[in-house]
Length: 264
Image 1 (cartoon, one colour):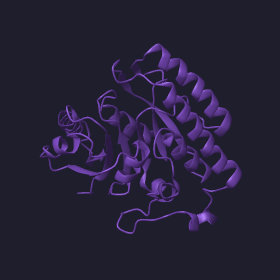
Image 2 (cartoon, one colour):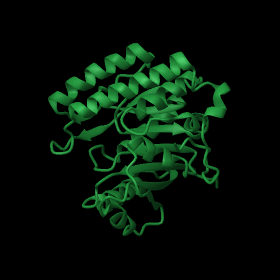
Image 3 (cartoon, rainbow, N blue to C red):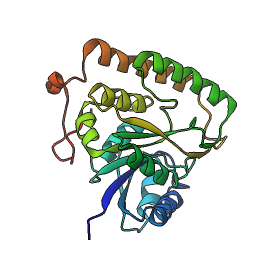
Image 4 (tube, rainbow, N blue to C red):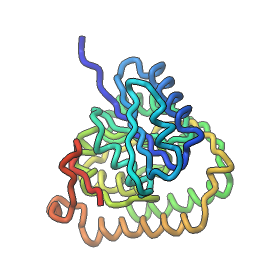
């Protein structure tokens, strides 16, 4: 019997002590039911030991769930890279904790990965088949931000910011060591750098999203930081050529990780 492909699901978690145990158990249950032709691992990365998130996540006693973390909060981008660097999958995904995005969306993205023979599949809230409950103000900001991203980077996507994507391992082995963004614009950096390095088979897939009004609000401070991070990515990519192959000496590596990865 042929060995099943392994998919690694990275779940970044911050201040989710009250829900993380249930969330991880739910993700594992959905994946065990839907990924019949694949094996999987779930790597929960606790982004700072600030509350009881790490302790609660450790209570999950499932063979495919691994919990890692670190003391200081560093941001979602750092957490995703931290988990990816410890992954073993042939495919590597990340999925936001909190269950706004249904874990059943993973199977839809996997199907699109196979159909398109894609390098990257991006979950898209604007896909015509997606089911989305979306606050108006957040929708307006999303449209404006996407327009700016399209102008700056030319990515052929209708949505770059949804909290679920799948990458072939060969993509992340090249892209991951070069990444810098720790917080809000990590999605753009991953996608723009991958495309710049020649991984252009990037496609979208539908997802199911139910936003929590209490947690989905976005502040002007966050918006400003996202814009600044995005402009910094553009400057490094288009002006400095920081992400190019000739700049290996500028990247810092952790020899203990499965990937060599910038952890600064």
